Length: 339
Image (tube, rainbow, N blue to C red; front, top):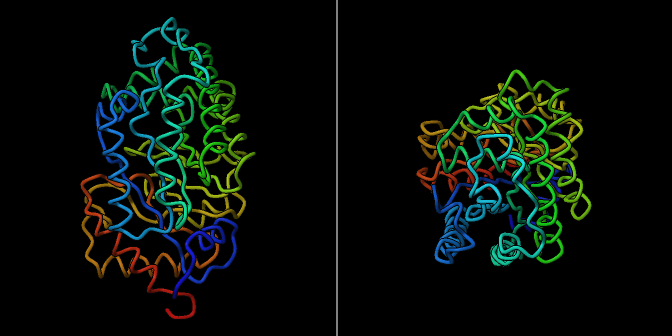
């Protein structure tokens, strides 16, 4: 059956019945320091573009989530120790003309133009304070300092997030105005601390996140909220019931919240997921037949309305892309009425 993939995905996002359940998976294309050096390294950006294109050709996806690697290094946090309240207060907006924004727009336009005629495209955007976490965990490999900053300097932590939000908001607005991007994939996460229950989160973190999401929703009806459970970080999904998005994606396996249960939490809106993204799981080790049967199981359980087959988060880079192709093939096999 020849189905227009852009139309198919829009119907799935809009909670309409579809003839075939769409799929969307993604992984990184560079790691470590390369994820933070895009503005200075055209060779890294070229490698990232080629990685996206190669993945697309191999896997036949129904959507393309475009990774923001190369630009994970938000400048005010790069030459910053991120250890004290003073370090947090040094973080100030860089404004619309900084290369981190202008070069990122060029890069995203280059990616979007590769795919937008065939599939919808979504750019990965980390919520403002998550930008700090990503630097500390992905580059410094320090998995404790982010929570230390949040717990010990909440006011300064909040102030830093508000400054970062200014620039991410500029970036998102320019992305929609200056490229053909369809939406953003907005990454949020609970602060992994008992000192940040809902009321504290709402005071210090939520105000740093909402303007970006509101801007995205102003320009597009097709934005995805990702509640990140990467590396088995756990979240209370109820924190985000008033975060307006068209599709919700969370770590079903880490959280122990099924797609059906999560769909109820988010008012019956569309959901994306179904596969554990971790090494050694089905998407990594499963045979073609096992993947085929699991896709059928997911469709049987979740139906043809408001459901996109995907994973809890990015899949590891060393998972063979053929595994995603097997899943894509299965989704094409189980057409509504032909199962």
